[in-house]
Image (cartoon, rainbow, N blue to C red):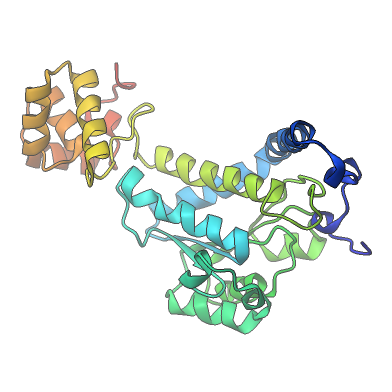
Length: 302
């Protein structure tokens, strides 16, 4: 294909993909997908460095921004959108910026990715500042919109990272605080990075935000005790957490959750320590939001 980018190379394993029967076609796709997890695992060191940057950013009052175009941008917006209901965060804490605006989430605007200046402008409109962390996502490594946004982020004093699926240049590594490069290889359909590269992107983003939420006290053990009770499903989950960890019957769990204002963490501390909501809130604040700390270092839920 006369292109140095790994994501634009032709995959020899799929040269005859249009002649496969359905079963063999599915098997080939699944075989390629299995390579994704290995490629992401190989970047454990870089992902860990990025995670530590995100945690440091949050603890310092900063925010995490994802910037991308096409599939990369959509995955960033998706990951950001899932933080408030899952972990009870302020919507401003993790934000996704996509080339072409939110309309590009449902209708592709491919030309938007070529506008380097717009990337910088969109970043400025979000008020990015020193203390924030901006992660650019461009699986090919070359999207002008993303590079423009990251360049502006650095001039504003924010730290930056880059996520791509082709070998990064030395210049790229020098330009950013961290570079994550899971090499997923050529796509089955040449250049269709919504496939393996997109899957790798989602795995990395999930790791960064989930890891950061755990390390900043948004879980107790493996329970999402900072969830927002905004629908029947989440209310049911909240009540099940209280019943399982506090050995309460359904009615008692409902009364406790109501007394805690729908806040699971507060309810747990109230019941375990025999205090009311204001005292539970104060203990949680003193412990940096960590339930274990508020409960004098209990290791985790039963």
